[in-house]
Length: 115
Image (cartoon, rainbow, N blue to C red):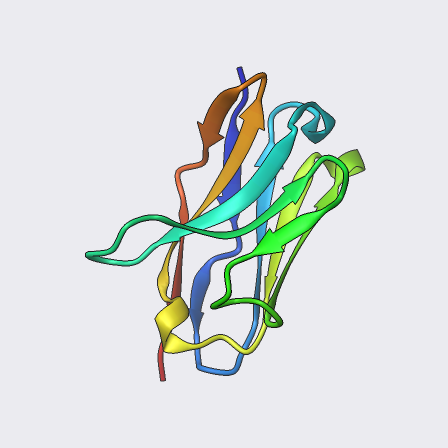
């Protein structure tokens, strides 16, 4: 069993930044893969960024060069640094982790980019 809790969402203007955090209830070294997904109103949930236990990362084309995913094993936390935010980044952002082939999800944090 594991729980993931997101924080750091909010309302920002275009061009600003946010950092999302995902705190895990157990050591994130147990998770083979962790990542961030987002879901905008009326759209499917989509992968934003993921980080493997090896440290390798992957990003969606829409955020490449603007977002960065990282993990702090000592704090059992995964971060998503989001720079140069755009209105189309508005969505609920969900933390995801795979532990022993089981998918775990957080409850999400709202990110709204609007002037």
